[in-house]
Length: 263
Image (cartoon, rainbow, N blue to C red; front, side, top):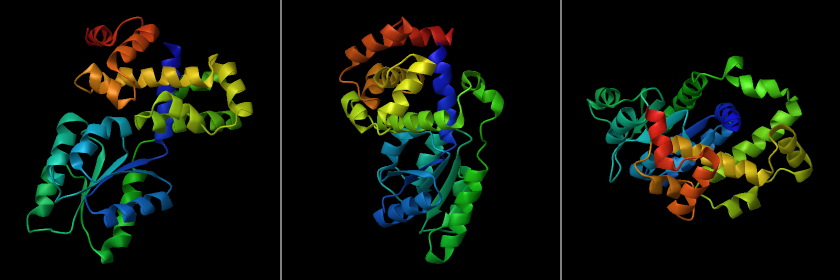
């Protein structure tokens, strides 16, 4: 489906606005890291519970994870091990702790940390430089990976309007917002956005959001254990409505669609 190729390339472009997942049960630390990320022009996603963060990692798709060690119910070491086993062997993980022991550094690396740092005020400059280094090492998108968007021959202003809208929709959908709330929070002026969507995709803004949410669902079906989990994650009112909407776009209900991918 051609529109999904556009969604794939737009998602990769918006990933160039780096996303950092911050997991720490200390609110003062997450506040500090969140402010640091904003200063660095990267988008922070804060979690105070590692289990909740683990459930959301596929939705956030972070460029970098910053995680504390001593937390309940899941500590940072077990969180990293779960990330490496179930989600990503390549995402950068910065492991922080204020309770380092002699073997902590070794344990952190064994459980999947890219970098280990101790929490201390005197290390704040090192922490900032380390975050910059890890983010700059994240691969960016090549021209060949934008083939479908390039074929549309948008000018820079049009692409900027589209990316702003796409990223806003992406964030609201991944937060599990209902469609009516997503529509209400779209900030791009109609005079710019609507002609652009109609010109290049023959879609209204609402149709674009509906189609994009289903595209995200098609990806999550491979990662979450049930259609109910996918439905809940993306803000559908119930799994039956999700299944009907999915079938209308992909001509197959979710589980049948998933089986065709595995063949």
